[in-house]
Length: 196
Image (cartoon, rainbow, N blue to C red; front, side):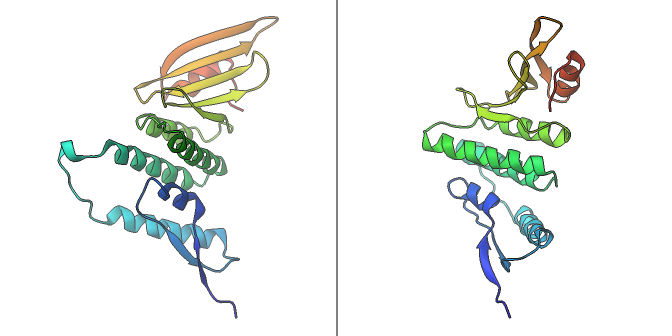
């Protein structure tokens, strides 16, 4: 008879190492099914959402805490979306956050929800290279070769910045524009950009 042991749930606890005070541990056997683990995670997240939240005055809210909360919420939403690509995106977001902390930099908290919303909205776009810009905003790039790419910078403002190079008959078309996050993929696709 195998005994149950407590194992840390890596994708969520990795955020909590420096950014959240809560840690989640699951009680499961080493060969637990993914569905069982996900069910436990959903229950724990539901408990966390229904727990009373302390109310602070506007001056007392720690902006760093709010940024970390946005990262946690984005990772949670990406993980619970049941899209394997979104889990990879969440892992990269965690990694960028860790790297930023190590290098005494930051991820722009306003960039995070816009970034997560894009991937949650467009489930058919491929996995991009995800980087942090010098000013802390998130950038996703789909590279297809020389003169063939699209990049989106998630500014956290209503308009995201887009740069694209799209091959044409012996030339390369270059595009630089800003667009509402809800319209970025359709507009870029209409120009011939690929999110594969």
